Amino acid sequence: MIHIHVGIEHELHLQMYLQPDAQGAPICSFNVTEDLGELIEETFTRGVLAEKFPADPATIHVNIRPIYLQEPAVAKVQVQLVAGENGEAGTYYQDYTAGRWIRTAQWKALQLRESGRLSQDQTAYRLLVALERSSGALPEAPLLQSPPVEDSDLDAAGVRRFSEGSLESDRPVLVNARFAADAIRRCEEAGNQETGGAVLGKLIRLPQPLPGTETRIVTILASLVEDPRHVGMAAAFNFSPEGLVEAARIGELRGLGESVLTVFHSHGWSPHCRNCKPKVGCLLAKSSPSLQDYEMLSLFPSKGTLMPIAGRKPGVQGDRPILRIFAWRGGQLKAIRWQQYED
Amino acid sequence: MVALNRFTMSDLARQKRVEVDLDGGVLSRAHSVAQAVEHYRDRMQIRDAGLRWTAFSRGVMLDGKRRLGELEVTDTEWTVMPEVSAG
Ligand SMILES: [Zn+2]
Image (tube, rainbow over all chains, first blue to last red; front, side):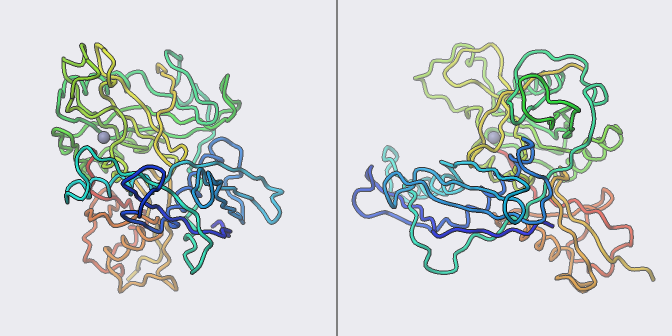
């Protein structure tokens, strides 16, 4: 159990406006100080997986400070972690331009459009402000736990040969070529319906970092487990808890120390994607996480979670769907580089 | 009768865990499975988005209404998850 002390002299508020540059009165305002909990967790998990921060210190002091665009408007939020009493065990920080407040603002804009307070072509502008902390609105310390990592080597992990792709230096992700091919093929076959399944994988610690990377911890996405109990439709894919538990059992039977690390889903595909014209309206989602996809992550509360999505590459003509892998970076899911391997 | 004393609630990926001690913790044998799941969500700081949550032990779904005192002594490793949809 890690003891966490959060130090912050401000509270954060999200304001939404009908005009840019925060002109006029805000149409709504929320205290989003609580959203900092997620950023503390992301900073911790990133630091641990990058081997830049200890995995299990007794105490962590968290220092949070706003970096102003122009006071009180916030450009970035800096989250610094200090391990041990004086930081002798390590320090690590990340600057955030995004957080859960971005999704809150997007949901709010959808509601405002539905209720007619915002017209379809009107934009809602958001502003994050940091105010002197008045009450006890201190963010609750999140449960910081480092993910289990097994000491291994590429051979034992079933990695025989690297093929296409490249690696992020602080979060190397290896993807089994068969999983990547399955994901793309399933997306193509499902057409405008979404498809998906459980993804078996594990985190391993190699004796040495791979070339071009700075951490020995590597995430392996090994295989896709489909199940007829998961149901796909246009713009949605329902995961069955029973189907996911069955996938976990299959993972155990494989005896490779894998678990259901995440889930895969597709965002639809059409033969017209081959002649995609950027200016023409398309009902297929882009191959990036939707607001609904963020909600789905209550299934995987760790900020080390990856989200693989297959779909069209918007505005680009492609013969086949593409597979993208998203990781928590900067308070949101960002596409990261990954390398394919053959087993 | 041998009763369950401690158990662990974990997410599907086994990345995060909540340990429960039924002797002297926030949960007792009189609490239900559903209340234990609520405790998990609370500790994980997952907001209730109106999802249906379930707990599994040894591959079998636990009835939310069951008292923790009624569980088997082998129900020590739970997997807790919501029923979710991707968009
Ligand atoms: Zn999606």
